[in-house]
Image (cartoon, rainbow, N blue to C red; front, side, top):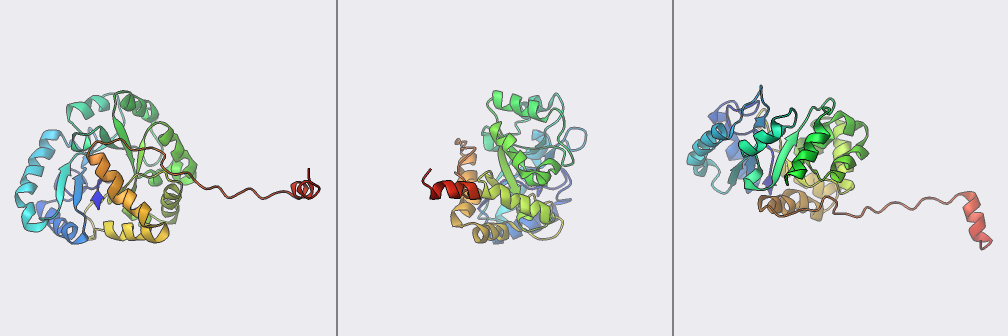
Length: 263
Ligand SMILES: [Fe+2]
C-alpha cells in the first residue's frame, strides 16, 4: 500500500505539531502495512511556506530516526500545492514540488468554490508537461453537489485522489457518497490519508478494506498500489481506465408495442 497525501512532517503546516507527534504516527504507519509514503505538507504562499529547503531539512532529520520506528516504510517528500495566483507554476518548478522528481504534482484549491484561475493554471501545468493530481475532489462544493463535474478535470488531463476519511464517512454522508460514485465511475486514481495527526488514528488500511468490500480487490489494488507505484516511477497513467456499464434504458409502452408488431 502507498499513501501519497498526508501532513505528518512536523512543524510545517497544520499537520503534526512536533517531532514527538510525527514519531507516534511513524509507529502507526509501520503497523498499518503501508510500505511507501509521500509526505505532502501544504505549499500555500502567505500561509505555509513549505519550501524545498525547509522540507528537505526536516525530512533528513526524520530519515535519521525512521529505522527506529518505521523500518519497513520507504519515505518520499513533496507538497500539496494550493493552486492559485500567477506565480504558483514557477514556484512548482523552482521549489521542485513534484512527487519523487516525476511529472506528477499534488494540487488543491478552495473547498467552498473553485478559484477563477483554476482551470487556466491546470491548463498551463499540462502544457508544461506536468501531471496534476487533484486532492480530495469529493470534498469540493461543486463536486459534492454534482459529482459529474469531476469529469471536467479528467477531460483536462487531471488525475483524482480521494481521501481515506471520505471513504470511511469522516466528512459526512454526502462526501462519502460522492467518493463512492467517483470510484464507481472509474474516475479515481489514488487514495491518500490526508492525515493531519489529530486523532492518533491512521486509517489507510481500513479505507482499502472498505473499497475492497464495496467494489472488489482489483479496485482496492489499483488505487492503493498499482497506480501510485507507477506514478512514483513516473509512468503514464490513463485518465479513463474503465468502461462503465450503463443500465439499459427501459423501453416505453409504445416501443414495446412496435417490437411486438415487428416494426
Ligand atoms: Fe492535505
